[in-house]
Length: 262
Image 1 (cartoon, rainbow, N blue to C red):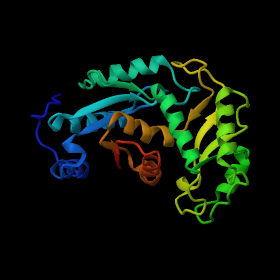
Image 2 (cartoon, rainbow, N blue to C red):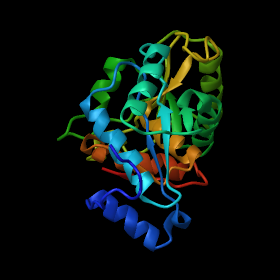
Image 3 (cartoon, one colour):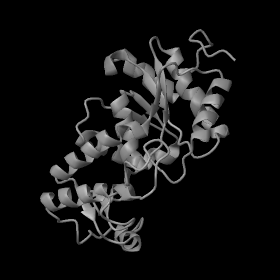
Image 4 (tube, rainbow, N blue to C red):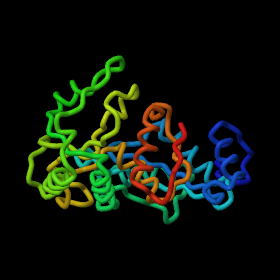
């Protein structure tokens, strides 16, 4: 298999977006993609497609780079065995991330700081509803959600509770941190999604340093921004998540603004 820029040219809507961005000078003409698997199992054929697409697009563009990132924000399912297996599989497919191996868990402190920023901007709050109560308040595809009675907590109270969540004062499920967006949005993903949960579980890399962990929808766009990803290529299942992806990046005021493409 040849993965070099000299391989026969290909064309699809994703490559057309990347080409148009380069022509317009967007991202200073840079192309930085990423393959971000969660190390909670072995890769399958769908992952292989994503690997070839992300590494392939990077290779086709001068100076292009593809990062390999372990999306390891769930301490209950991840294992070093899968981290190594993923690297072996990417190499087997003929790709090389060089020195661009990253771990979302390395960003835990920065992600926490972004969450604090959202609280200070009155765009996040600590919710004390149970999981079942939260589900009922969320509404349905045809019915709007109902705001949590804890949505109006003050900035000071939210900061205090969030710090105490981090320090391990509360048991699992006692509180979550939620974004404050729009409980009436037709897009359920924007109905005050959970940003942080309490989980008293040791992480395979950070040990017992943390007992609160960020959600995928919070950690993923910010990891992209931290790494300077220009084109965050996702499957169609994430199309409805794009407004939340953009909201997180914008409201956290990141210096880099990655673009999600499904």
